[in-house]
Image (tube, rainbow, N blue to C red; front, side):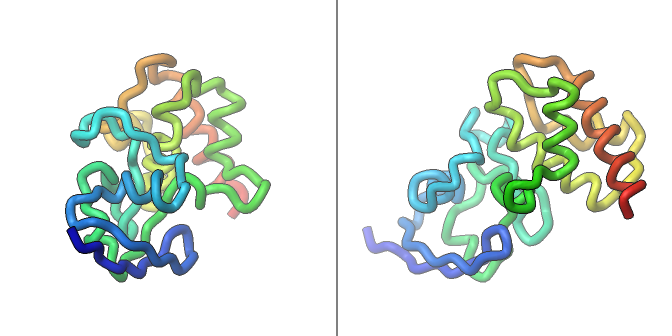
Length: 159
């Protein structure tokens, strides 16, 4: 099957790759581009482990065909930190022990960042609603919610 040439932006960098028409964006990110922070949990869009942003919209990379990335802007967990400096969300996840096995963590970080970019002062209910598409089987959600609330507070005071 012939491959398609794709040009896109990933984490603010111009990227080109070849993909088969049926390859998912998740497969290309992990296998072709080496961006393994985005995890495969279910492959059906139910767990949120593969959450990325596509033109600023939160999506599951397992449900997006790689050919759909042509000319688009993609954000992955690798683009959240500023070099070696963790984003406040990442730091607060560590501080609050809001991670264990790590499968869900990248998707939760990307989803929470997407929320805070839209709403810098979300209520607990809004955080829980926004993160409802991300499943965590290890920590329970209280530590995750507290980490997002604390990061939101830090981000608001640093502006």
